[in-house]
View 1 (cartoon, helix red, strand yellow):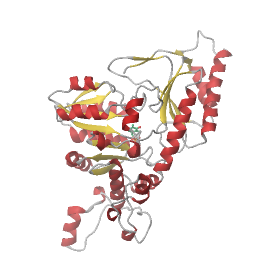
View 2 (cartoon, helix red, strand yellow):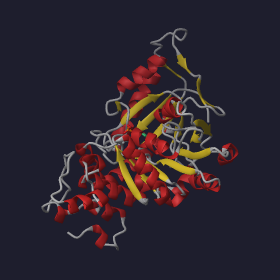
View 3 (cartoon, rainbow, N blue to C red):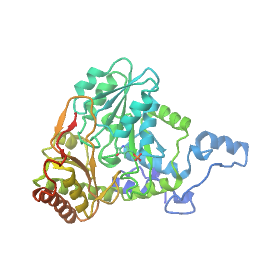
View 4 (cartoon, protein in one colour):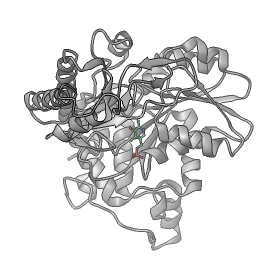
Length: 414
Ligand SMILES: *Cc1c(COP(=O)(O)O)cnc(C)c1O
């Protein structure tokens, strides 16, 4: 098999997913790049050592043929200049921020951002004397007003992990670039297949590969991809911190990539069917899914995205804690768990995000749902059964109303 660089006519995602990051001729004909374990890489001559030191991995911490294969594959799919792996998605997020910022700088973060990134900004960036501010994910004018001479980077996540607001990335990037501000975006929800960050003005794009790229809930890995201008800073920061993914996890991520296209179609379809269906359940106040035509982010999603993942939110009508317990213990196919992007369905009661700006009232609890690859009919039946059981629990007055803790004051701010 020839290297993919020789097949410049290959563009379709399905073909790329089967052929990227493979080089059988360099690995005893193996269809897949084998797992490389190693710290020391030995050279026989000084000349060989010089060559290795220049362009090739010269030490395990600087990568292996396997890590380079995955980086090259993801870079091609994201449409960037180069990619670099990190031991987790969170590590890719935090090091991308550190690559762009120094003491005295300011960063503007979308107010719907993944909570651990927010915690990093407030605990670590603040300690490094980097000013952290937030802007409303759906108000580009607010971003424009908050950029000042110290602003070095903005950080986006579209849609937001918990509240699913779609961001107008091209508009936000245009505002940032007018002031020479770098644009970092967490692209985990859409994967490199359904949102092309570099066509929309992003400078560094992040994937928590733990989610859909690995796809089987059995490994942790992150990857950040930069355009040419942002690459040097990203790469040197990763090297200074000594960040490197484990070989087994990298192998699993590259294996997961082969079926990413098929899996995403299934997650998209199952998620949307489930979301549409849940809109009609009497216990549901609102469904947060950008592919639903009545979602506030739908038009931007339709304009900029090529598909949807299986992750979305539902806002319930007010429901007591005991009713929620009934709901979750009635679910047979949905596990209660963190993370998402595996083959399996998950449901999670999420704390409404603590937001700084504005306010959006949620009448009841917020659930984050990951639609896995089970039969959609059975997923719908399972979720309906559990919601019905929760409603019946109220009707049966299992809990006297005066003692039930009604979750109705979930404050979130938009
Ligand atoms: C899970 C997640 C991360 C972090 O990934 P880990 O591999 O768990 O560290 C980052 N961003 C988003 C949007 C995520 O959902």
